[in-house]
Length: 384
Image 1: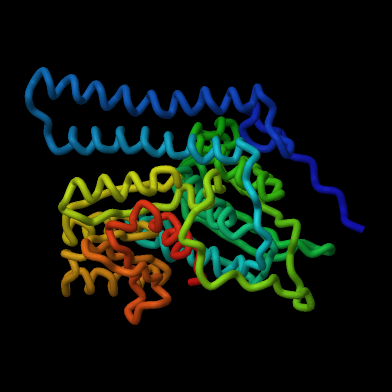
Image 2 (image 1 turned 45 degrees about the vertical axis):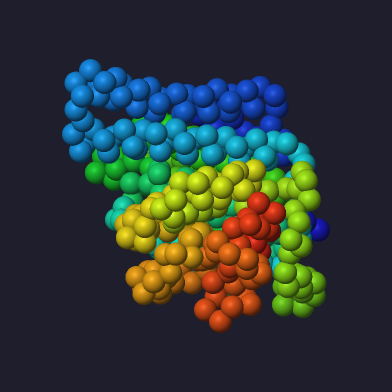
């Protein structure tokens, strides 16, 4: 008989950590909306102040420009988090049941974000047992990325990730542990200090709500400057369990209206010097909840990727060059699952990456509006 779930631990801030059931109350959602407004308004206020100073003086130094860009970026990220939370709150998600190799998925996410962690000087220590679970693959990907967003923004140390099994009955258990305060503080100061606001930010809310949507209870403890989050997955597969039926080889080229958006939060980089093409591509995917950025050239794309890798690079055919191929090969070393999609001006049959010898998907510009969402859905969900 299955043992009862442990009671959630108390949190110092109402609705912040574990005082949630499977669904939030209207008051708790109202608190999240208030938090969303604050996390957008704060950075935008700082940006407006910089813009006002620029208007008055007609000058801005490199540091001021960087601060302005960071402020706008933080507000944008908060808006994206709000979109993802709204999607989870809608109650219209249709969850799939797939057999997922959890350790492999987590290693893939860590590889995708290795440049980011190295740039921040944060070490990720892993102890991952090969465990399979039954869950929705798209939501699992979102959960692992949300977990990394929250941990990277909150840690003052390395991040320890442990994946193992609970005692009988066996369930997959993922534990994320890091220091949320500088360990240079005295033990008395660590014991008495309140947890920092970053621990209960919108990034945490997204981790929390994604987990609950999947039926996973997030159990978090913040003690003596250390945060430990445990995610226990209810459907863990044993060696004798039958595998899930295989996924179809290719998606339909028409996306049904009102379909769930499992790719929300994935990062798309558009590489094109033409503003009208960039606008067309952004318009074609705006309903999917993707985080999109655009640059003009391959060199700018390389600089962008040096700070953090996107999940998809969408580039126009005129930029095909040895420079682009070198970039693709270099990025593939860090993130073998990184997707490249070429956009051609002429008539071109839509091709998935699995149908081309170099593994680059292709799509005609005339088919972008109809076919690009389905191509992205396939490329981002294919096994790595």
